[in-house]
Figure 1 (spheres, rainbow, N blue to C red):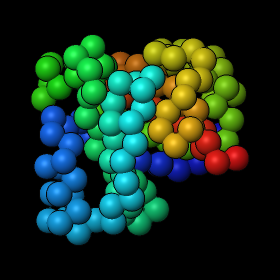
Figure 2: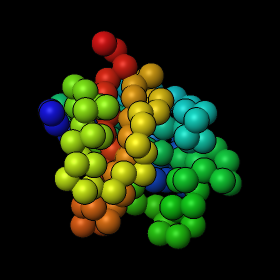
Figure 3: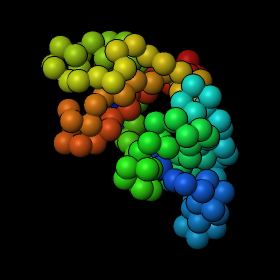
Length: 135
């Protein structure tokens, strides 16, 4: 079952500049950064209410985020929705003919499990399903 929006991810080219902007200009609570080797990204997290903003910068030219930036430029990359049971949610989506980019969970930031649904399934929005790694 889908529970809540976990975070909104924004693809950025210069992570350090954007950390300063979101922390110092917007005044958001900066939580920290993490490199996610499997995704070839470095991410910075900010808290705003019960939701997080995740700034995402590529660490390699072949990173999916690097390809996104080359094609579309900086901006909203995806919306992450928390679920209690990622494998079941993937199965439920597949039964409803949602095109999945990930048919099996993989590791994301904070040791969570994630899977992406294709943007064509949700009006052009890349949707990340996330099961918290702090269970």
